[in-house]
Image (tube, rainbow, N blue to C red; front, side, top):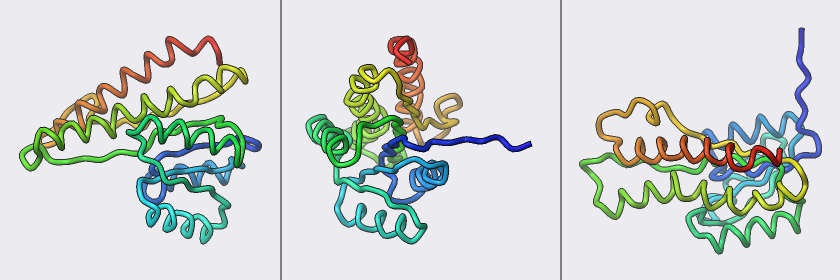
Length: 178
């Protein structure tokens, strides 16, 4: 028995999707009919991503944006709405990991900023339009480390644990708006 799954007519923003897990998620969504928009922090990464999507037969739209910068995120979300359409699906995928004994306190804060604060910033930017249109989906990429922890990845585990709780609270607060 096959199940039909269609994202036809939906715009999906997958953060940090020039390569890796984000690229795989976006490619799967594209195969289900979604229009893909993605970002990365540098133009060269966006260009590489656009080339990879084109090679995969996907007409994606790429934007340079630091997801830890609220002004840049708000501008990107507005530009996507203008260039493509409002965002229906957000996948907060962008993330970094550093090893505890090799990082400074500033690098610890950077991991928290990218892995926890950025999903808050991007979600906050897309939620009003989703509420206005009566629908939307936000998918936050966590990790087993949000439950288990592991040696050497303290900042990552702390951020992903926080992201898990942020996800639950976004559901509690905004689920009523579909």
